[in-house]
Length: 280
Image 1: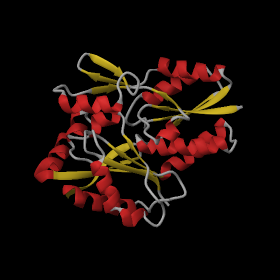
Image 2: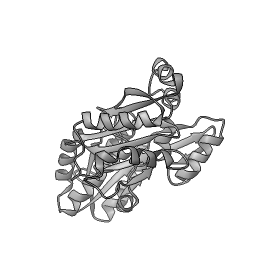
Image 3: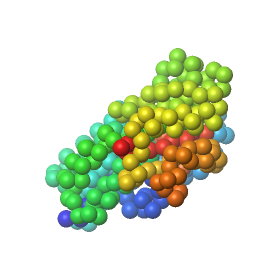
Image 4: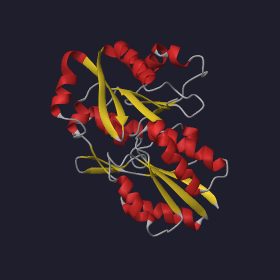
């Protein structure tokens, strides 16, 4: 039976990978205005509204009904489905996916990525590789659950303010990070956000990113690797690529990158750079 790989819209990946997947959208709200992530609000439009609007956006999980509709279509087309969701520690989307799967016994395999954004994205890319090798849904899900613990997402943020507003970190942690133009470096570990360190300026922050990647065990360049950025342009990302050249120059001709979607962008804010990789 053919296997379809499905994600929710918090997963960010290279365009050529996204074209091979089905994505179930979460919702983004600006006051009373509601948008479907990536469908009725593009990423570019989101960051324009985020920067220009006085209203702080909020997000809501994908519903079981949204997953049910996506499952029903895939099953009707003869597919077995492997679904990879945002960490269940960050959203109820995983539970929605599980609830909807109950109506399709044996056909849907739901995997909690224990990650988000580009971290979920590289796990989904690995799932596609497994599907192309001919593995069935149950085998793919099992391998994903084994490999997800090797995924690292480390990010340099411009500010902790958006994480504080969204309730992802405490006000005390946000205040400490906001002093003296300090840029925090954070990691998603065990499905939760942890502050690894604080840097003065992007140059120091980029160096701290490189250090934390090395501390995490280094990059397995035989597996998918992806960078992400938030905001209206990628100049901070390109600066990181230059500053971290010693880390990757002997292993890759170039580094792929993507604009992070609106749900994660709501909590990270503009000006963030993230790297997702499988550690050695």
